[in-house]
Length: 186
Length: 228
Image 1 (cartoon, each protein chain N blue to C red):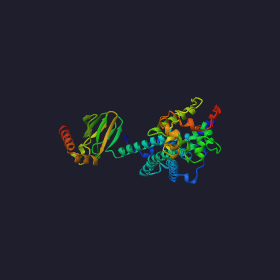
Image 2 (image 1 turned 180 degrees about the vertical axis):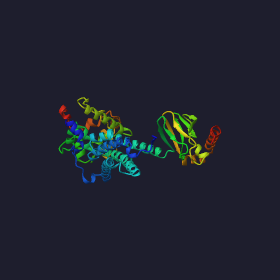
Image 3 (image 1 turned 90 degrees about the vertical axis):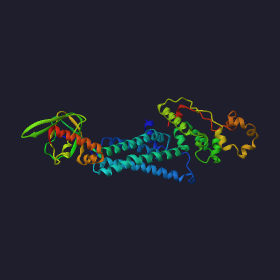
Image 4 (image 1 turned 30 degrees about the vertical axis):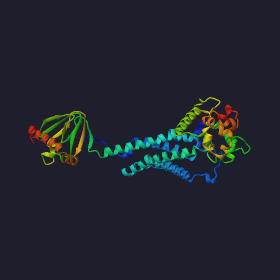
């Protein structure tokens, strides 16, 4: 299974860091030139080139840090799957709930060696929540991608907290789980 | 080619027409200059360290160092660089570093035998420091910005070689530059010409330099005067 998780790359690998370094180095050099011996030319170069470079570097770094924080502490992971990949298998321990952003998936139950497609889900729908409502924390069905798929994955702990914090969301998920049980069995 | 060399190594350009006396050196400015130089140097060294070691550092350490190198030090350098730069911009050597044709005026000002107004003010220490700025910088609230903007335009004209000869003042010299120091002094009030003609002097109908000039020695401007 090939899963791409976006947003957890090390900060040192961020390509924008090099641009920041270049801008800051340029700005510091012009500043040193101007401070070492202030002439009309050196001060103008500092004001026209050095100062904008330093301010741009500061602004860019703040944006990078904020963006990194946002990604690092975001509730969701972004996962990408190729067509035909199995996202999880029936009977596995459940650790997350998925929300479909792009593409379609098939929910498949296997009984006595025979596969049955229970549902086809698309963008805006979610799956993987059943394990937290109805069973011993194990997947009640497998899910396989039909097309290239992009999913937002919410971890078990965050999902549980979300349900506890927002009763309306818990009600929504419970109703959906009940509906799915009614339609497809446990 | 010499322009390129001057552009690259302008910090080595020797422009020292007037050596300041010890008590004319502002210790706050000196320390600010040292601090900003040190900050810029620290920024460069820290940057080089990050280039070499950023992948070996922990995430948190790297972010704190980046915060220092790319946010705190640049803001410090920009703030102090402007304060120091704008203070240094009042000095004679700074003015002369761009106003190349006026080197002759500076020499005349320092000539102990010259009878021009600039030389008398310099010799008698009526303008003890920042002599160019003392008489030519009554800019007002937004005047500093306007003057720097105009200076930037002249800078670009000089390097693009789009200026026209002879170089002229942007505007006639204003009496207000003289009156800001001289009006209401006993010596000014002694003269009946000043008392009787005060309205004309204030309005600029009667120029100070018409009676007291010339401010600077006459200069023959040639194309050669514009080279460094």
